[in-house]
Image 1 (cartoon, rainbow, N blue to C red):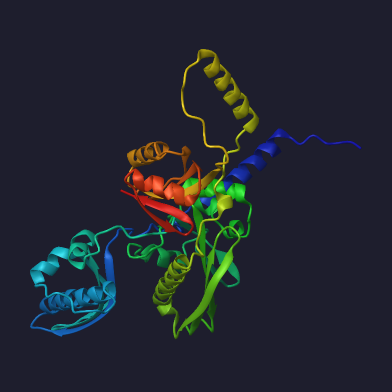
Image 2 (cartoon, one colour):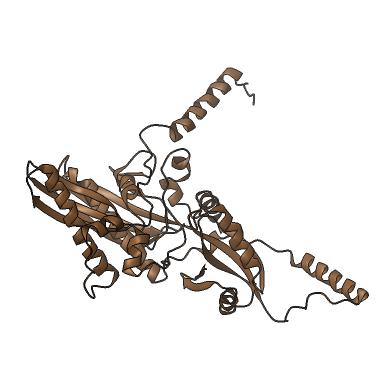
Length: 407
């Protein structure tokens, strides 16, 4: 059999074509939606306003004032389980704790203002009055991969979708889930696509999660079904979790016209967030242990090193560190800690290594400004580790099988 040599110019042309295909996959102005707000503001939405005044501006200002008052009452009831009435605050006091007004829908007339508004309350200032200034237990950082089925084709970040926009609009501050939302630009369409959600391989998932600073993955899906162009639309939602794409729950919503799809998807995001929050409370949203790579230790090398140290100690007739208690098993535990900046990461690792019984502490999932995950090797069980951490001044709680620490 004879082989023909492929001309160099053809090989070069093929290489350029492949490069152009890859470039086309990661470039373009029709994809990418940056998250609008990831702050910790308290939010109250859906406040109906209908105000009349002498001018349109006065009516609008009056409507916003009413929204602040009604929003404060609803926020107080939400935080206190509906028990007791909210303390009376004047408009000037409300101005000091309100971070912004969200206009969901509005109609402005010459002397009338009809709107549906939301109110954002500053967590630090409003929290002091609400009595909830303490830390709120949140999940480990969860990477969000929003999949939208339309016309029988799944989309993630290949093009800008209404589902991605809805997740970008969602305000995550009041959610117990620590969402890691990506903009969908650069290499995101190559790394995070529908095909990846169908691959359970842990090695590649660990690489992706480490790049985005997450500990696990959430895959919220929506399947859009249109009756006819511009007509009724039905959306089937499903909340999925983990590299195995495990189904948590499903539900359906519908609207009577296509122009209401964004509002329907916003409601879908809120309901899926509630499903994830309930799953977290029931312990179903624990990070997969297989996503945390435990370093393999060469035990034979350690034994040889220990024997050498012991022989040198006996020959020198000196006493160093007391021998470990026989029968104590060294186990690996997951610890979650707030890391507002890079300096906090090193500080947490250093503090954990100083806890008696801790053999090693390594950050396996970094989330600056959020909750990082640290893998700790400890000689003892989880209860003993919790006691040792408390003795070092940490406040310890258990969340999803991991220990959450704070000062």
